[in-house]
Image 1 (cartoon, helix red, strand yellow):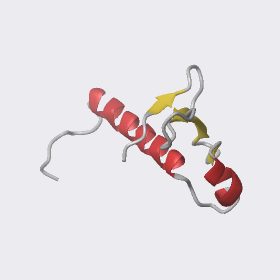
Image 2 (tube, rainbow, N blue to C red):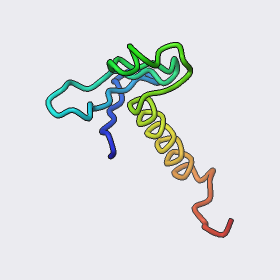
Image 3 (tube, rainbow, N blue to C red):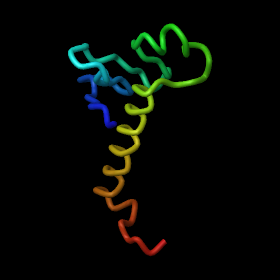
Image 4 (cartoon, one colour):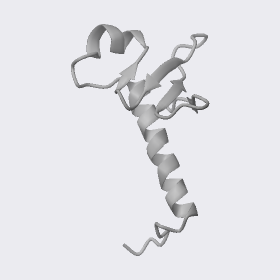
Length: 82
C-alpha cells in the first residue's frame, strides 16, 4: 500500500503523510528528526530507533525526489548498463 506524501510548504524534511485509516487527517512527519505524529510512533516507537510506515513513506518520497533531480541535472545516468 502506497501512502500519499505531501511536502510541507517552505520547510525542508517535513511532510504530511496520509493515514491508512480512511477519514483521518494526515500525519506530520519530520524525516530529519525521524519523528511522526501518528499514535503508533508516539506510543510505541518513539525513542526506539524504529520507524513507522509514515516515516518510511516520507523517506522514500525524499529519495525519489532527490534521484529525479539528479537525473534532471544529468549527474546520474539513466543507462541500465550498470
